[in-house]
Length: 292
Image (cartoon, helix red, strand yellow):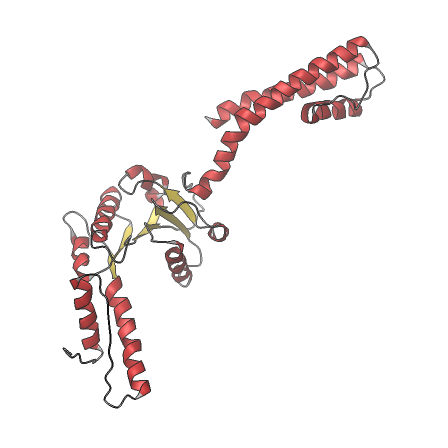
């Protein structure tokens, strides 16, 4: 669509440029071709004809008409061609374009629905440790645009509905090697269902892609084993994070050498599943809990 609008205007600009150059050369015999080219360019893009003052009424009339035509042509350029060109230029940054793949392209991986760009960066840095070449495409509904630093790293963004196959087609799922499906929130039990729905769409559309599904709790992990689809790997957020937290806590208690090795811990889990996971992890590192 853009090219169909660009070509007629580009053709009109070239025709005006050639017409102005040849016309001035014919009407002003003392003008050389270099001066005619310079005058034509000046009249087209600066809206003036004082580079070569006319020496006859016919030449003056020609230059005035050419100035009117050039103003119209350049006006059309700025109103018809420039806006869609700017939108085309900005589309990749805003996640509105389609990912292009070629035979020589590095392996393509998707990270679907990350909570923020810090999540994307952590995944990117982890992948760099194992892969020398890869393309990472972020598929999201809420991330508005890609930061400049990620663009320099080759990370791409595709925005669209996570429930639409068109979004995944635009993101290059047909050529993807793997897809990491993130939990959209770590304090919302309904987020587990969103992960399951996205996993189902991807697995049914292209079952050969290797999928990694992230859930907040162990309870949500059961959703990655739904009928007709199954994640190749599952990551559970709460056990990993809480295990790291209680390990730091237990080491802190031992390091400080409290006389009775007791301390008051106040936790604020968002649901009973997370509370149970915290207790489980505390028991694993040998932290005894008291009802008081």
